[in-house]
Amino acid sequence: MLIPLKYNLRHLVARWKTTLVAGVTFGLVIATFIIVMSLARGVEQALTTTGNPLNVIILRPGVESESQSQVAKDMYQTIRNYGGIAKDETGEPLASPEVLTLVNKPRATDGKASNVQIRGMHPLSLKIHPALRLVSGRMFTPGLREAVVSKRIAERFQGLKLGERTRLGRGEWTIVGVFDAQGTAFDSEIWADYQEVMQEFDRDAYSSVLVRAVDRAAVGSLKTLVEEDRRVKLTAKSEQLYYEEQTKTAKPIKAFAVFLAAIMAVGASFAGMNTMYSRVANRSREIGTLRVLGFTPMAVLASFLIESVLLALCGGIVGCLLALPINGLATGTTNFATFSEVVFYFAITPGLMLQGMAFAVAMGLAGGFFPAWAASRQTALTALRQL
Amino acid sequence: MPGSDGKPVIEIRGLQKVFAHGDTEVAALENIDIDIHQGEFVCLMGPSGSGKSTLLHLIAGLDNPTGGQCRVLGQELSDMSERDLSRWRNEHIGFIFQSFNLIPVLTAYENVEMPLLLTGLSRKERGEHIEAALGIVGLSDRLTHYPRQLSGGQEQRVAIARALVADPDLVLADEPTGDLDAKSAEEVLTILRKLNQDYGKTIIMVTHDPKASGYATVTRHLDKGQMLPL
Ligand SMILES: Nc1ncnc2c1ncn2[C@@H]1O[C@H](COP(=O)(O)OP(=O)(O)OP(=O)(O)O)[C@@H](O)[C@H]1O
Ligand SMILES: [Mg+2]
Image (cartoon, rainbow over the protein chains, first blue to last red):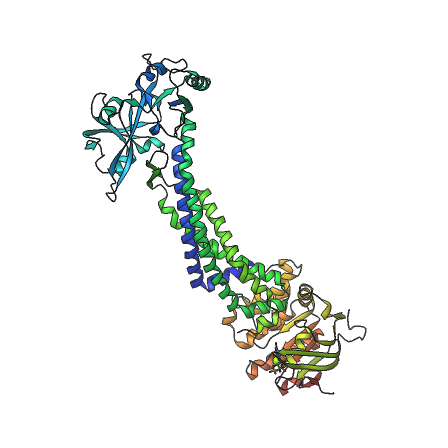
C-alpha cells in the first residue's frame, strides 16, 4: 500500500524554495535537451522534405553531394535527349544543368562570414521545383548578373535584400527576387543563371543535371539509362534519396544533443539527489511515524522516489516553458555535406516535449533512488530518534 | 480473539534487551516477566533510563529483544519480518508519542486517515471511522485544520484518534502527557480512560506523572531495567 501522492505534493509546496531551485536546475537541462534536439530535427526536416519523388539528380559516381560533382558540358546534351524526361508546354525537356558554388557573406546578426550556396540553373529549373514560389520581385533574367535569394537567406545575411547590389565572386550582382522554398534545403540557397555563374566563377563544367521524370516508373528507367550509358559515366539518384542521404548532417547534432544532455543530466541528477537527501533527513521523524503506523519500507522507498520524479517533472515543465519561445525561430548550421549554411526553423513539437518529460522522469529516478533507499532502510526507531 | 479466553494479551518471560555502546554494553531491560490481560490499563512508571520506552518498543515490534520471550496477541514477534511486522502493527497496535508526531502537511482528518489507507476500507467507510475517532477525542470541528493550527493538547488528541481509528487491540502510549500543560494532560488522560472503560481497549501507558497512574487500572514500576514486584 502506498503513501498518498498528496503527501508528496504538499511537501513540494511546503518546501517550495528547494523545489524551485531543483525545478530550475532540471528545467535548464531539459530545455537544453529539447532545443538541441529540435535543432537536429529542424535540419532533418529541411533536408528530407526537399526531394521531389519525380526529380532525378544526375551526378558523378562516388560523390556525396552535388557540390563535389562535375558533369562535362557536352553530356548535358546527351542527357536531355533521354526518354522518360517530362517536357514543358513548348516541348523543351525539363532538364536543368546546375552549377553549385559557395560564396562567403557576412551574417546580418554578428557580421561574421559564413558560406552560402549559390545554385546556377537553367530558367526551366523553376518548373522542376514547383514547391518554390517567388514572394517578391521577379525571376533572374538569363544573360544578366541577377540573382534571386531565399527569404531566410535574405534575412540572415547582409547585402542580400531585394534590390540590393552585392558582390558574388568578382562582380556585382543585383538581387531581383526573393523566394520561399517552404522549409526545404533550397531555403538556404541563392539562385542565378547557370551561364552567368559559370563565367563569374570560372567553371567549365556543370555540377549536376536535374531532370523531371514523366512518372514514377520513368525514375527507375532513367537511372538505368544513365548508369548503363558508357558515354557519360554518370550516376543518377532520385532527388528524394539524395536529400535523405544528406540528413547525416543532423546525426552529429543529435549525437551532440545526447552527449550534452547526458553530461548535464548527471549534474542535475546529483543536484536532485542532494535535494532529496536533505528532504529525507528533514522528514526523518515522519518516516519513523509512517513506519510505526504500519507503512512498509517499500512504501517509504516508493514515496520518496515518486517525490523525486515529481520534482523532476516540475523541472520538465519549466524546461518546456523555457524552450517554447524559440519555437518557429529560424537559425542556421553548417551542412557537413556541402559546407554551406543550412537554414531551418526550430520546431518545439509536443513529441519533443514528451521526450523532455520522459528524460526528466529518468533523471528523477536516478537522483531519487539512493536517498529513497536510505529512507527505507532506516528502522522506525532510528528514524524517530533523529530531530 | 486473543485474551478473551483469559489468556494474557501480552506474555513476557525473561525478556532482555542489551544495547551495545561501542565496547560497553547497556542492559536496558533485564529478565522482565509480565502478563497483561485484555481490558487492562497499565501505567508504567520509573526513573529516566529505566527502560520504559524500550519495553514499549519491544511490545510494538519496533525493536528486537536480545533474549527471552515476548508474545503479543499470541504472536512471537521476533519471528516476523519487517514487512509482516508493519502489517501486524497496522492491524493491532495504536501508538501514541510524547511529541504527537502528526504529519505537518496533512490535515487532522488526513492524519487520522493514514492507518486506514493500509486497510481495505472504502473512502466512505474510512470517512465514517475517522469522524467517529475524532468525535471520541472531541475534535469533530477540526477536521480540516493542519497540525500547526492546533494547540498541543488538540494535536495529541488527533494523534489519539489516529491511534484508535483502525480499532487496534492494543494502545501503547509513551509519555502522552509529557509535552502538555496540566489541563490538556487531564483531557488526554480522561480520553484514555474512556477508551479503556467504554471501549474496552487494552492500554499500556508510560508516564512520569504520578497523577496519571490514578487513571490506570494497574501501575507497574521499572527500575534500572528490572520490573519491581507488584
Ligand atoms: N538505541 C539505543 N542505543 C543505545 N542505548 C539505548 C538505546 N535506546 C535506549 N538505550 C539505553 O537504554 C536505557 C533505557 O532507555 P529507555 O529509553 O528505555 O529509558 P526510559 O525509561 O524510556 O527513559 P525516559 O524516561 O528518559 O524516557 C538507557 O540507558 C538508554 O541509554
Ligand atoms: Mg522513554
